[in-house]
Length: 191
Image (cartoon, rainbow, N blue to C red; front, top):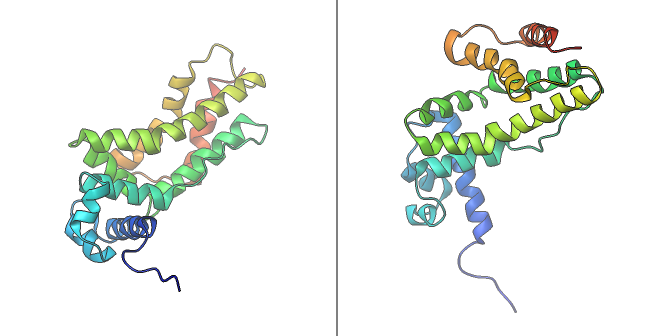
């Protein structure tokens, strides 16, 4: 008989730690989480957590991104306006949800911890920015947008108002706002 005894597989342990970190993040927010709390919830020792992550921020970010990461599909409806609407509206819906509000908390924490800011940029922001780049490039290729566009600036123009409302003014971010945002942004970019 070949019985398995001893410790659970590493992948199972990692997953329980990531799940615990994510649950605590949603329940209590980033500031109140401790490595001890994550260890208790996951049923592991702090040493096990430190085996894979150097600090609380790393494990919490991994927990968040593991739970919310989906395939970053690039919408391709054949229309720059429709593609941008899908992308921006999906992002706005996520950011205004209870799970998405974690993003604003991570942005805030990133103002004090450059490692958190860098992880946020690398793992969340930059992949989504790349999707936007592809959408704009297709719009140029299809002749919907001016050829000489500064695509990086166009991306900033598209998303800055969304984050401005979420982080600064607190004004409503909904589907109507997204439609108006896209219509106004594209009015100066279209051929």
